[in-house]
Image 1 (cartoon, rainbow over the protein chains, first blue to last red):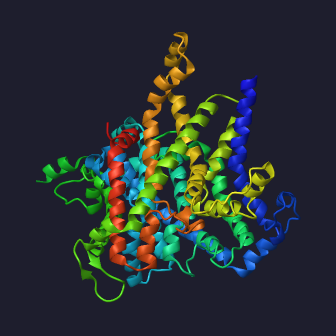
Image 2 (tube, chains in turn purple, brown; image 1 turned 90 degrees about the vertical axis):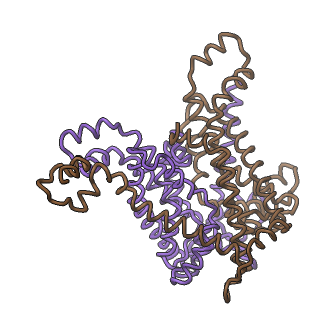
Image 3 (cartoon, rainbow over the protein chains, first blue to last red; image 1 turned 90 degrees about the horizontal axis):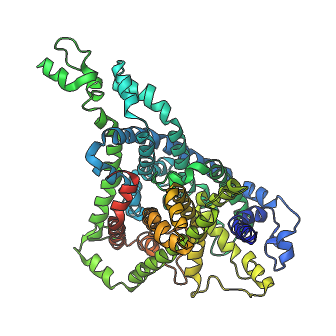
Length: 271
Length: 313
């Protein structure tokens, strides 16, 4: 009995600790400045909700445009990444192409510190006029998502039994047909999970977006970070922007519970 | 000649009649080359996006270049200067310090919660689902959020501490700031350890634990001698993966201290040198150094990781 009480007390404390800050974003988003900058604990929780932050965010800042930028770049880069990595992962999983070395090289790109790529790309992009363009950032996102996606898909492809493919080959299917008609349908859940993960990585990305965009291609994370200026900090619009930006990832986290650990460990732990 | 080719190409080329040359498509999808065909896009991408930056970064690191004029070749001077650069060495030490604190904190909390939640209880899916939420939220947004919540006067945390009677805390003072950043990072990532270890606990064989219980082993003994050793491959995975992420910590700094009050970490130093002071050569040397550091750390633990990932046996 005491054990049960302790169990629930600890669990609830942990939950408050985890969820509290996330809820705080939403609470702050609906607060007027005087409720944000108050030293009275009561009015931190009990306040008259207002939509001012949102309306200021929508009118005074290019929020929707920046959000659209993020969405466009996430979707396009993810599409490219998936085409490249589905084929590559199939090759690695079925034939162990390159004897594990190539796969090692692939995963090691993900371990490269972002700055190693940032410096050369910055000057290359500057010469090619790709700074502050959608294309430039899409290329960078393709670069940093491909190795991850290949690895995650690799795990899913390995679960497809070889015998199925051999049976199909005996029935007279060519390699391309086997892939399209036998393997691809079996791998669809894996493709869905990998796609969502790539979308989230690009969606949340800040470092490259911060270095490589200015105005035209600015992403929403960079916009939100700009509210934390050196002169004044605009917590209201910041929270309003964050509350909308974070929503898709929160939904994904909730609905993909089963796959999150698998994704974050590059497929090493099935979760 | 034709027969030889047909037999070598196998399935894909069997349909060929007589001595007709196979089309490119047939060669590409033939039994022999198909695996390489599938890899072409990836190899092109790796060549362009991995080798090119690596080459240029190494090239710049041997030069002095301030974005204008010609780069001057200075050999190993950048690397030599780096060894005497107090700021850089401090940043490196700090990065390791943060790495150790965060990994240790995440593992301890993670393991404790994994042991706690390794059972069936009502609402377990809700509890687990809620705990996963911070993992996928943008680190930058979270750092701004914590920056706000830990503000001295108006921050929610300080006000709660004040009411409880613990008094307000200067979270961003030079003394505490580094630990505050560790705390934020641990807060976001402890669920990762928890859930990896939960998955591990679930896959452990039950009969061993049954046997040790029958033999009258104490719970602490069972934990130390059975649970912990069996979880060690997973703990290794957590350490390697987290070390990889932590060595590049950038977003939490940007949202909070911006490298001030004694919180400058490795990646921030590189960023500042290359993109604020535009000392490209020196910055490149830093970047190359930090790359080797990452590779070194990973090489030490990589076999474990690759084994766990099933790449090697």
